Each structure stands twice: as structure tokens, then as C-alpha cells.
Image (cartoon, rainbow, N blue to C red; front, top):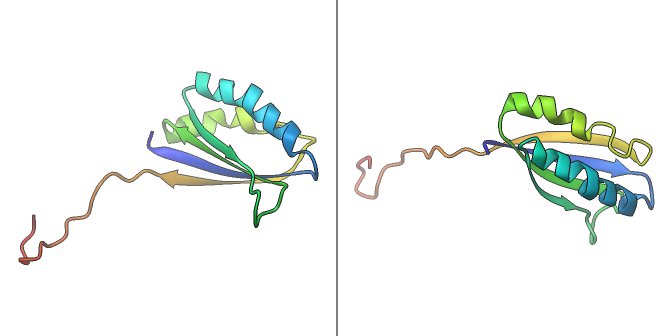
Length: 105
């Protein structure tokens, strides 16, 4: 997985349990079947808004992410108010830095 989506969904007050069940029972299996890797679904218990739901989903490629949006768009459409998506890139390249002796590795 090279990409991860961090999705923040604001659900209607007191609707988190319903949204959670819908996500875990319907969206999670569909995402897995489509080649995505759902990592977690979080709801801040302390210091957050109870209506705020965070999900992290591994995505095989940019094109597949775009195609897979239909799985999540409209999920629990009467339960959520708005959604924000951010992409996280897994960067495996390491910068070359000088050693203590001042030479490049």
C-alpha cells in the first residue's frame, strides 16, 4: 500500500453507533473485496467531538482510490453531516545524510 486515506466524517448527534455498524458490516467487507485495506474506525472518547469519526484505509493506487469512492460516498447518508478526506503517502525513500566523519554513506 502506497496511499492511505484519512477520512473524517461528522455524524448527526447520537448516530455514531448506527454509523459504526454500517461502516463495519457493509463498507469494510466491500472495501476489502475491492483490494483496499481498512485499518481502523475511531471515535474520540476524550477531548473530541462524539460526532467525529476517523477512518484510515490503505489504498493500492491513486486510480483505485478514485474508483473506490463509490463504496463510501453516501454511506449512512442520513446519519452524516459532512466528510473531509486527506491522503497520506507512504514514503519509503530515505534521504542521504552525511555520516559523522562527513562522508556520504
